[in-house]
Length: 404
Image (cartoon, rainbow, N blue to C red; front, side):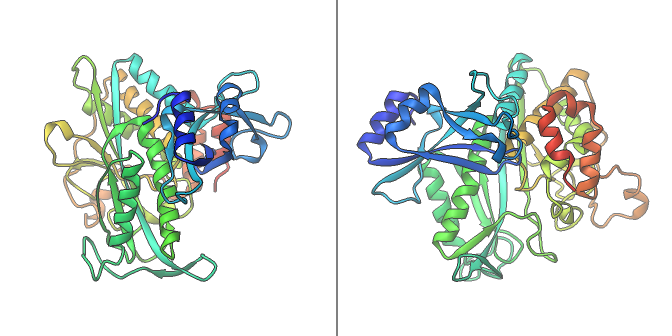
């Protein structure tokens, strides 16, 4: 890994890197970039590279539209799916105003602020994501035909599982970029796959999520396929989730696992529009192991939060409601803030719901608090939240308030 401007300049020269993609995300977590030539690197590091913020969702309007990208050296990585001659690299950037002030509505910066807030309270949070995605055959123009790559089931092997080699290529590609996949397998839906990541600090985990989706899309295209991260690409089949695993710990050894989880449970309805920002997100809830109720239980996949069976050093909170359309920077930031709120207030989670909620009687489920059932409801709940107004800039709140 490279850490300084000088090291990157030397690497670019020695390894025939011809294009450097300065990468950032819009308010919804969609990756954006500007490609510069190696000769522009020095200017990028010293003065930044400007872009039209009015054309990027959540960043500005035409009146004050100039923002600048400043590369962060430690995030430099070569993109292995690009040609080896005239290689292409990417580097995540800090977004700044013309006066040098950091852009307060850059979602990556919002996550940095949440991490700093936790650090000041002696709390560390590690995150790991589990991504599900479908692979469909592409037509002659590279668009999805809607025909799944295979009709295998959960954890099937070849020849039923035709995504095996694609997953292998994805994992090896990510590993070459310094990202650590932990496991991969075929999921329940036709052409559906899952790749899980080893936990890491919150910012690295969010960066890795953005890189992962980009890598999956490119490698799928290279194999004549289209990758879909839609929460519900096939109406009658399993949806795609992005289960988020969180391991909170205290620098002084204080036990904070349960109050941290209680904070997430207490704020989950207010946060849902950021974890599930599309109409399709809400078609997924309540079936095929996707949650509907605000509950928790050890090892139970019908719950919103599951505490997986694990040894002590891998004990974690698994939040099962988010899907891959979420902006990971906002998702992780809000989960940190919610957990900290639980710790500060000494919250206690409700009793665990140790039943299968998919087959439970109505007299049990009707008493349980539910996740929002539509995008419009989720946006409305968020817009009324003091917690959200306190933690996020108005511009980000406005962008998500109008989703419906």
